[in-house]
Length: 93
Image (cartoon, rainbow, N blue to C red; front, side, top):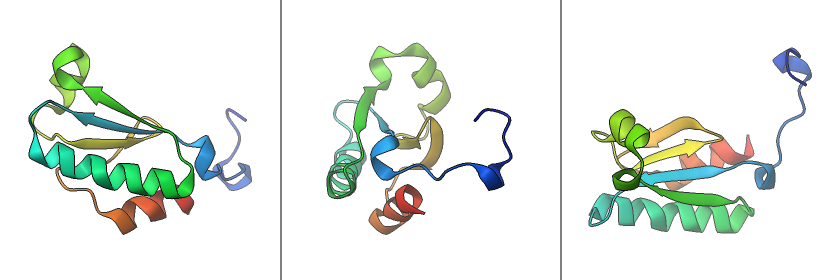
């Protein structure tokens, strides 16, 4: 489907998406974000993964001022505070 017009691409099902939570230990905003990600992804059957910026130099360089950062399919969705309804919409629209 590479190179195909976006108008003709099949919409990805939620379970075909991947949410990544970029975080670091001891971050209370990260803990809050994880609760939202766990709830929304659990409700929708979307896989998600935590990534620790203290263990990944590239993530640290890119996101250290914004954590927590939520990525959907590798693209930045939000940072600092995660809105449950906005995340849910992004995964289902």
